[in-house]
Every structure is written in C-alpha cells, then in structure tokens.
Image (cartoon, rainbow, N blue to C red; front, side):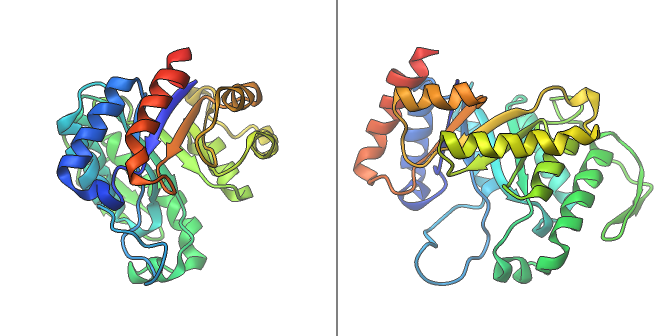
Amino acid sequence: MKFGLYGLHRDRNVDPGVLVRRARAAEEAGFESLWVGDHIALPAGEGNPPRLEALVALTYLAAVTERVRLGVGLIVLPQRQPVLLAKQVTSLDVLSGGRLTVAVGAGYVEPELNAMGVTLAERGARTEEYLRVMRALWGAEPSFEGRFVSFSGVVQHPSPVQRPHPPIVVGGHSAAAYRRAVRHGSGWYGWGLDPGGTAEALRALAEAGRDGQRPAGLGDLEITMTPPGVPGPDTVRRYADVGVDRLIIDLEGIDDDAVDGVITYVGRDLAGQG
C-alpha cells in the first residue's frame, strides 16, 4: 500500500515555513506522494478555509522536496483553460523531475463554476474535451477542433518528462466519472468511503469497464482512496483486500497540533509495513 498526504495547501499550512517543514517531514517519513486540491472561489461561510492555488502550491513543493511524488487533485478541469493548463502541467513535470500526477474531476460547486464562466450542465462535456485537448498538445499535435476549444498551427515545447504525459487520475463517484476513468485514466480516485463502500464503488467501476472502451496502453486502473479519518493497520489491510493501491490521508479535521504526529504515525506504523 502506498500512502499520500492531502491538505498541505490549506489552513495553517499556507505559512511557507510550516508548508516546507511538513512536506519534508512527510517525504522523510516515507509518504509516496503529497496532494493538493483545487478550489479557486468558494461560497462565503464555513468550509472555506485559507488555501493556496493548487499549481502554485505544487511548484513550491517541487522546489523543496526531492523524491516524493506530487499530486494535483482533484483539479476542477472544466474551470481551467486547457491549453494553458497543459503548459502548466508540463512545466511542473519538468521542474519536479517527472514526479507529477494529475487527478481531475468535473466539479460540483455551481457558484465556483459560474464564476469561472462554466455552467453546471456543460461541465462533463468540457471535462471530456479538455482531456483530449491536453493530450493533443502533449503529443505535439498542431491542431484541434472542438466545441469549446480550437487551435491550429501551434505546438508546445518542452514535452513532459513522463511520456506520453504525467499519469491522469479521474475522480468522482458518478457513473460518468467511472466511465471517464475507464476511458482516460491511469487510475481512479475516490473520497470518503470505508472499505465496504469502496468495494461497492469498485464493482461499479468494473461494470463501467465491461464495454471494452479502455485503451490497452493504459494498463490496469490504479485505485486511490481518501479514507474517512486516519485508518489503523487493520483498516489499511481491509482497503488493500478490496483492491486499493493508495490511501491519501486528509489533514482536514485533524487538530493542527496533532498533524506532525499523524505524519510520523503513518510513516512509522503504516507505510513502514510496506
């Protein structure tokens, strides 16, 4: 089982000194990856803590770590301009030495999508098209004609370090998300499910894959889950038994004074078990 850490872009971690210290501690403790999420403008009120922009935060993390993988996820793909995003992802992959993973989702916060010029109704179509746009650019295709994006006679250089591009992970628990993961993803990312709920989601994911539309080059679908809370060893084994490859520990809800202890515990008592 691989372990990731989510949340170093939020709350007190927006302090550069805290961010660097905890990122390096997680790397030394044996975490496989560090993940940051993507919300740009959320409704006012509770549930909207201070947070750094995802790609800026990952660029900073790339500069202060050496080995740990860096995950952006879930990036709300329909509210990003995909030609620019493809360039940003490539730049991050180059600067990190090929350590980047990109997890994408269609989004669900309607006021945020609207603020970025996107309607809730078109988020799925944009997500599908934007994935094709970015793959075209990473493959040095000089033209693309779509419903939302068109370009001709342009290419991007350099290419990503990871070829043909950084791993794409698709998140979400809807039927559309499962189909998207099968067609486009190196992996699927679920959130907040216990081992039993994860098993049900994986059955639905397998059903979505029975239509034969998964490209052979993508290989097996890697399964990532953010569990509710910090799991113990027995719970970790239950996740492994149902087919989870990576658990990402979310720092939300953990007292700030306890975060360093959680990093040490996961590295010593969970990741250390292999």
